[in-house]
Amino acid sequence: MDTRELIQRALEARELAYAPYSGFCVGAALETAEGEVFTGCNIENAGFSPTNCAERTAFFKAVSEGRRSFRRIVVVGGVRGPVTGYCAPCGVCRQVMAEFCDPKTFQVLLAKSPEDWRTYTLDELLPLAQHPEGEQGLDFFRHSTPAG
Image 1 (cartoon, rainbow, N blue to C red):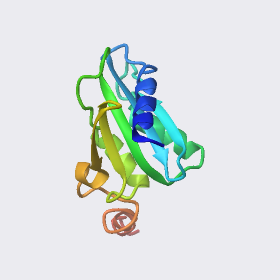
Image 2 (image 1 turned 90 degrees about the horizontal axis):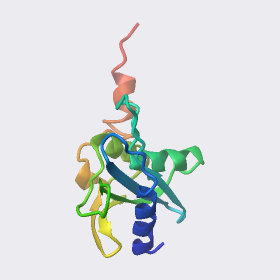
Image 3 (image 1 turned 120 degrees about the vertical axis):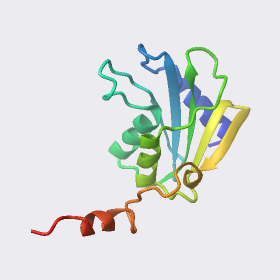
């Protein structure tokens, strides 16, 4: 899918955000390796902790449909109204991305409009992440369990 189209999908998802407490609306469009797109918006909750970010909404929708290979995600966000700044994923969302994506190749696009965006790799946004493979991933948990 063309980058501008993917940004437009994220902007459309942002319109569906449920943000009655903060008024901060976020949309995301996640592209699989096969070219499918899963969108998500942030969904707030009065308890705050149950709130779900747009990026995780998109990832959880995709994973729940059996997708596990991803190319890139677009994130747009800001207070209600036109998007005026770039909106980066929170740390929890970055860690969810690290669970499913190659940090060296997965792209995170922060956009204001279909004509204005910045592209980063996940590795740039989350250096030293815990990954499901390697020293910082499953091996860490296997070797850190108490004996007994």
